[in-house]
Image (tube, rainbow, N blue to C red; front, side, top):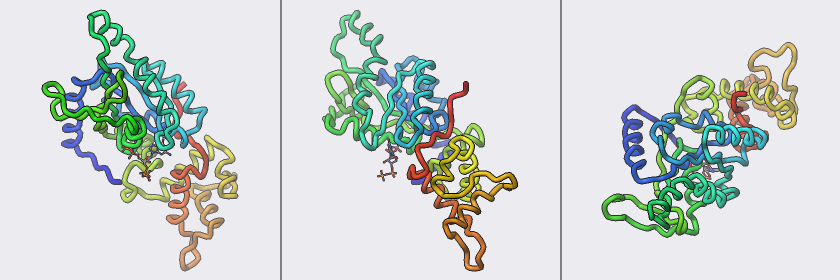
Length: 284
Ligand code: G4P
């Protein structure tokens, strides 16, 4: 997986999305439940202005359920209709139809008053790479998967998936670009593995991640690796060295192989082997 975004790509993706907005009633946005804000591109709020909004917190199996509950309330306060989903297992996916209908209730009512009845609402999935858009669409549309084909005129070139008589889904998701608004956002996106690792220094990533987890989820590092999380005399990197020692990550000369230890930690985190951990909380 490698995503490189250049201004040209972003401009093109944005133009396409602005075009697609004309065809739909509701924007269904996916974010990663571990980093709901850092994996959200705020530009979509402008692009989707006037549309009904659904927010899907995906990968809930990897996130801390308490944090996810706080985020649900937070997004609802921002005017989103929210669904909690694990697109990989399918858990929560079914409920999304109801959430979409709920989000479009006003529109359906308006249509009804104007004599328009039984017109399905049209939805589009959007999100930055790797949040699970394709997995979600497959799971959501899997069985329905009756493509309605091109509709002459308005929807030329577009494929719609008819989920049922009420909802149609644009079959290609809108791809938003990650927005690195701060160093912290960049770190969180790198921890979950959504930017190319090769340009990053695993030791630094792992050290920062360990220090975050030790603060936010005391006990988890100790449980997983059997080392002290914090010692009074600790200097930066000492926790990583302790894990390297415990795991026998040594170079030929007997020096600690910190890169190997770092990669073990990053893999463990991404494989949810340290626990279900959220990397940010809504601001109080
Ligand atoms: P995208 O279209 O937004 O780019 O994301 P995509 O569906 O390709 O999903 C990216 C990765 O996230 C995939 O893993 C996918 O299986 C995983 N994923 C999606 N939703 C969930 C979820 O709710 N929970 C968990 N745990 N994982 C999820 P992958 O390793 O890249 O591919 P694969 O090994 O699953 O094929």
